[in-house]
Image (tube, rainbow, N blue to C red; front, side, top):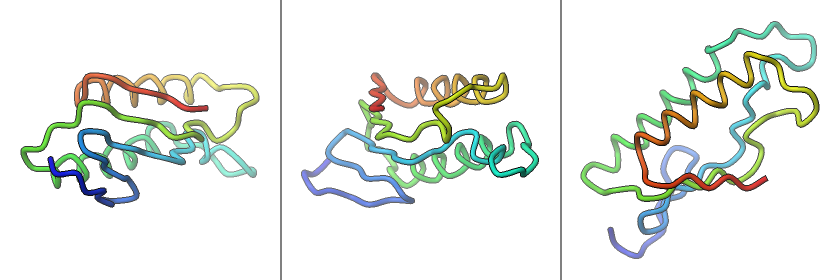
Length: 102
């Protein structure tokens, strides 16, 4: 991978590091809207699949989740917890290390 910084589908790729910000898991359940478990996660994973597909043969060794993984830092619902763990499981299949920044 060359040394250039690449911008791809709301992510930044720096060498072998994929930086993702503002995922906001649980955003669907805020402000009186109905929460549709998995719908938001499916959209996030679909977007990330396009990112990884566009990388072609380039290897991502690390993924940095650059803040706002969850939308609300108060109480966490069972659905939010499951979605967060599913997202981390998905990313573990795509890279060697995940770094989460609060």
